[in-house]
Image 1 (cartoon, rainbow, N blue to C red):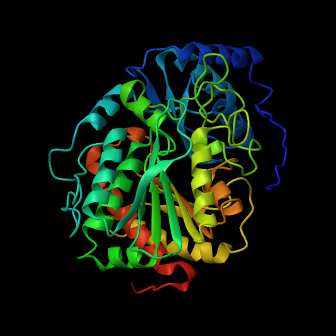
Image 2 (cartoon, rainbow, N blue to C red):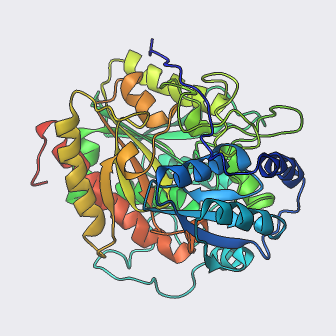
Image 3 (cartoon, rainbow, N blue to C red):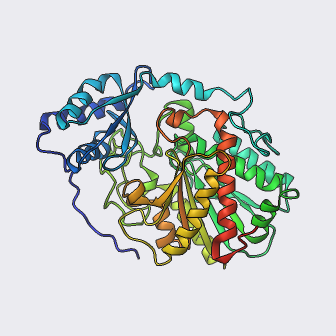
Length: 450
């Protein structure tokens, strides 16, 4: 059993902030739940906290203010945080920033225009080229973001087309709140091998993570007979993939609200959704979370309260009980171009931190290699911010994985942020592929020259 430390849940907002303003934030948050799902006139802004007092103000917004604003990325002192601000909230947000003496930089005046561009399939050549990027797909194509049922259908198709390389296609248990199955696929060439577990789209709006994972899965089997790296991975590992870990939320981003992050379970009153990456048993509800359902980082009313988190936990337990070794666990997110190492809940490192870091360094080099993308790797709380109840910490603390990494894929900044166009799927997927090869070849003193 993991020790659940308790910590006070204080905002830490400066005494200079008018309490009437804070009360109004909550009122606006309740109102925004029923607001129209259009983002015309919504601004994308960046702010930088220069000291701890200013950082506490931003942290208060992150934990309690949403959804009157939407924090797309949150960083530490002297680092850029990026926030979507609806027109109805901009005056209040500006007042709050002025009071805290935090300058605002407007990055985009109409987020809906960004989102509309990202919805269009890629018809022309991709923005970057390499000897492999021109490959647009083996079993499927990678020029548009796919709906959940398409993911399921493609996994079934991969099983039929590559029966010697796809060992299982099935559903995790339990089903989601809205009654959907959570599909997974197991790649391998037979026999019991060390296992790699990959989950993506646990945050619904991070479409590029799912697109990149689909590219990875397609290449893994479509290129097996031609690609030495694909053969090495499948000959030496069993690879479990849950490409859409939050199918309710993901479908909701296609049908109702493109920027929805959480799942869709019914919570307090009419409030919906829990941040699934705050719901795992890893110092749950201690840091980097909110106890208000209106927040995008609401951790739920209890540890593992959500079906999706339970389903991942149950599958990992099944792998471990079946005699396999869960060697690596990867949580794939976007955005910020980061590769994070454990633990996320505090400035604490695992006992094998040196080997985890050595592999992370090589993975990060691989992410940069084809296009010079500005990726950064490091300990989660140092590079990003501390969070509790995250799947990556649980995978090591409770799931037994020896190597654990969290990706924050492209882009680097919030412009375009979650509105990254489909022309980036293949380049992003290719970078992810190379990082996977680097990890596979260097874990447990593997074959670095593979």
